[in-house]
Structures are given as C-alpha cells and as structure tokens.
Length: 137
Image (cartoon, rainbow, N blue to C red):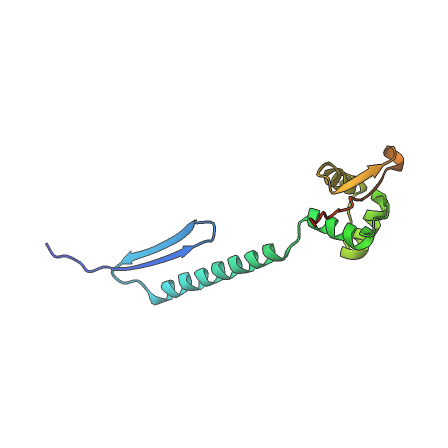
C-alpha cells in the first residue's frame, strides 16, 4: 500500500462575536487559483465586518438623539411640546419621524425622571428636570 501525499490548506476567520468561518482544502493537486479565490473572499468578509463595526460605533441611538435635541434646544429649562421636539429633531438630523414616536420617547424620558410634564394629553408640555448640586461646607 502506497501512502499518497495530500496538501491541506486551512483558512480561519474569527469574528468579534466569537463565531468562526473555516474553509479547508484537501487534496493532492489544489489549484493555486482556488486558494487565491478563498483568500480574496476572506479579505472581502473581513473588510465588510470592519466597516460594519465602525458604522455601529458611529451611529447614535434614537434616545441619544432625543436627549441631544432636548438639551440643545430646551436646556435652559423652557417648556416644550412634542411638536416642538419633532420640529427641532427634523432641523437637527434632517430625518422624519411620526409624532407618536416622539410622544413615546418623551414618555420614556418622563418615566425615567429626565423630564417633568404638565397639562392634559392635548396640551401636554415637558421640560428638563433641574439638576441640583449639593456641596458640603
């Protein structure tokens, strides 16, 4: 019995979430062109993963955007309506939102203690809760 010599080529790509992509070539005569194709594929996947991670790091959440709009436009403690926030949001981010979405986020900020509110449903107004610093003498 004669043992045949095989070439093994193993490509492993590890992703930030812990998953892996493994490609193995086994055989006596593996064309270099196939190996180069896999290398090119891995370069493309790695590049796309890097770009995706950079975009995720740069994007603000909708809540972060709301807080920023409120602080920049109404940080002086003035009262505002959901319509005021919607207008300011559109000017700042050039994005459109439904008024119901704005109301939902304002309610969340109110429930978390960031905002105070007054008035009934149709005439509801909000403002940032004043932060009081206490220092010891």
